Amino acid sequence: MDDATMAGVARALAHPARLQILHLLAKQTECRGADVFGELPLAQSTVSEHIRVLREAGLVNATPVGTRTVYCLVPGVLEAYLDAVQDVLSTCPSCQRG
Amino acid sequence: MDDATMAGVARALAHPARLQILHLLAKQTECRGADVFGELPLAQSTVSEHIRVLREAGLVNATPVGTRTVYCLVPGVLEAYLDAVQDVLSTCPSCQRG
DNA sequence: GTCATCTATCGTAAATCGCCGATAGACGAT
DNA sequence: ATCGTCTATCGGCGATTTACGATAGATGAC
Image (cartoon, rainbow over all chains, first blue to last red; front, top):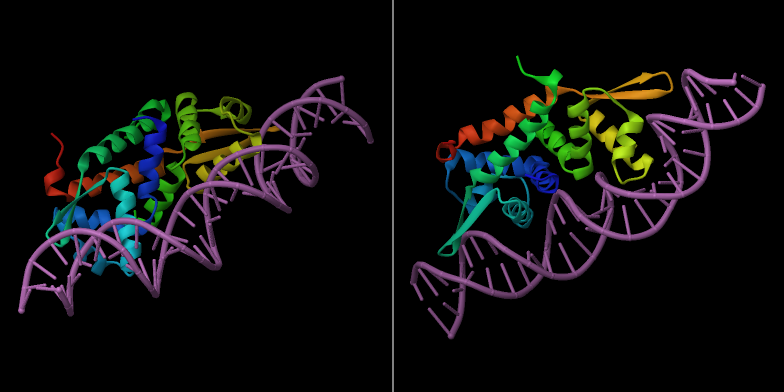
């Protein structure tokens, strides 16, 4: 994963509301929009924007089901990001975990 | 690590220049400012700002040595962040790595 | 002291972000 | 067809970010 992509994922993670959304999706594996909207103390449009950011970063998938939308966490990008962050630490000889 | 802190670290990582700086510091374990400034295609003041962001996030330490400054990567926060991101994946039953 | 070097900060302009209300678009129910 | 519900997008506002040049402050060399 190149630095630009990594920075993009980091930016998507760089907001408490978006982290909270990820936590919700991780817990439930399948989440209707109304559930997400209801959990956050923000306007529906704002939450929708946050979801859009997460989708554009490849972290969340949205599938329309009737009049609603079901969101779920996509692990792939997050895993790659995790590896990329881990690589930074691994490169550092004096930063090995004990 | 709470969501606000996590978002703060992610914010610090959310720029290619800052990632490049982290890579430089990870490689060399000790890095004089001039080395960092010289590696990036940005004005010295801009790089200094990026370093400040990384320092404020607790990712980088700066120690003045004579007229220069030596920077180094601080693994602690990055490790905690790594764990926090990992936790998101771990919470998701359908996201276990194979 | 004087000069050169290195780093941090200031001031500023352009771009982006985060938030909201309003509205559009899609679908099911009646 | 009409209504109500759910989600996405638009427009706009204030705040924040990123970039730069200019400059200040600190230290070593002479």
